[in-house]
Length: 223
Image (cartoon, rainbow, N blue to C red; front, side, top):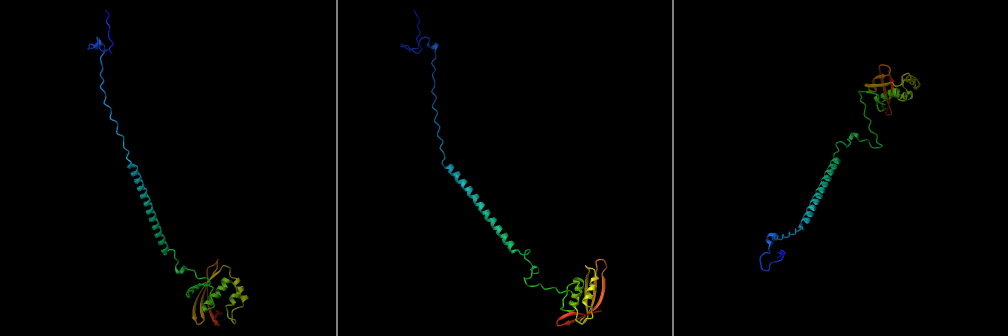
């Protein structure tokens, strides 16, 4: 008699487990895994980009406001400095002494010191003035004609040619200085200093008489 085994998948109609089924195979029961709850989708915060935009806008406006205030402050400081420079005349404004005379108006000639030693061109407005002019014509202009023109017509002084001959004996470059002291009306004591380039200064004492002719002064005599 043949012992036939049933296939494990065949259930015995009489109940029970097929022979050899318990020994040959074991039924594995799998416990079902509970389904994983689906993740809740993350809700996007629609307010975040708007807040970032507003914050950035506020920062930009604050920066622009600061720049604007800085520009206003700089302009105000520059304006104040410019006003201060325009009103500060302590260094740039010329003094009255430095203002040049108006065109066409001659600056007044300073009066020479009557007690000083004169080298100026002199004039014919006074006795000392014509004496200074006389010596200036002799040593600076070096003209016998100019010297003779400052004397009276009837003077005892020599002619212009003789005066010129005397001038020619004086080396060019010789300077002079004349100190004039009044002695009496129209008469003056004259201390003449002659300074030559290669010699020590020479001293000459003179008494010069002057004369007023029609408002102009002339040298009348020298002794």
